[in-house]
Image 1: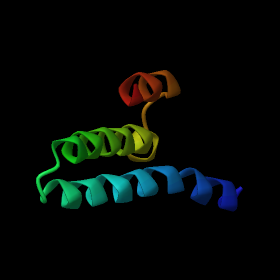
Image 2: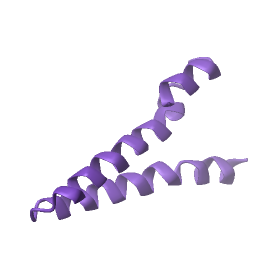
Image 3: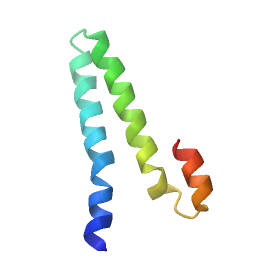
Image 4: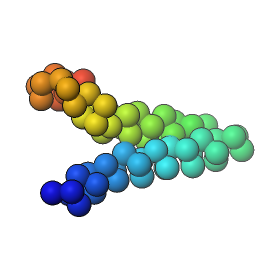
Amino acid sequence: MGAAVNFAFMLPVMMLTFGCTFLVVSRFGSREASLWAVGFLSAAVAFSVPMFFSWLPIPVQALSAD
């Protein structure tokens, strides 16, 4: 089960990486890149909610992640 848990948190890490990359690109004047950065960073936070709020009941985690 340990490998499955580690794999599950790879998605927020990759989204965080893409979000930061788009933030760097947006510094060169691309408005679209800043919008993509906000989208990826928001999704990374949403997918990380179960990790940070593991003490909450599952229905509350699901609502806060959405």
